[in-house]
Image (tube, rainbow, N blue to C red):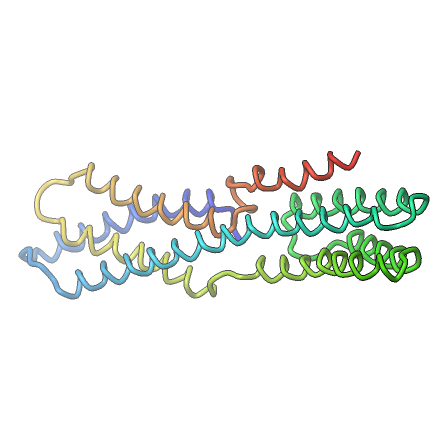
Length: 239
C-alpha cells in the first residue's frame, strides 16, 4: 500500500488538472450550459462509493483497536494463571511471557501481518514448559488461556487482511478524477471560481486521504499508539 499522504499529494493536483481540462473542453466546444441527469447520477454514485468505503474503513479500524485489547486481555489472563504452578517453576515462564509481549509489540510497530519467528518460538516454548510443569488441575485453567493467547495471533493476521478489493480503491480514484472533469466541464461558463475549484478538490482529497489513513492505520500518519499502550502497560507491569 502506498503511503496515504503520497496519494493525497498526487490526487489533489490531478483533480485540479482534470477540473481545468473539463473547463477548457467545454469552452472549446462552446456548448450552452445545461443540467445533466447523467452527470448528477455519476456524482451520486461517487458519493455512495465514498461513503460506503469510509464507513467500512471506520468499522475495520475499530476491529484493529479491539484486537489489541483482546490480545492484551488474553496474555494477562494466561500470565495471571501462572500462579497455579509451583512457585519455583514460575520465574522462567514469567520471563518467557515478558519476552513474548516484547516480540508482539515489535510486530505491531513493524506493521507486519505475519507472526514473527521469535513470537512463534516463544509460543512453543511457553506451551512446552506449561505442559511439563503444570499439574492436571492447573492444566484445566492454564492451558486453555495459553491456547487463547496463541489463537489471537491468527485472528490478528485475518483482520490485517480485511480490506476492500483493490478494484474498489481504483474505482474511488477513477470516480474522483472523472467527477473533477465533469465539474470543470459544467462550470465552463464565466470566469474561474477558484473558491469552488479548490474547495471541491480539497474536500474530495481530504476525505479519500482520511479513508486511507483509517483503512491502513499503521501505514500512514495515523497510528494506534494509544491502543498499543495497553499492551505496553501490561509488559511494564510484569517487571
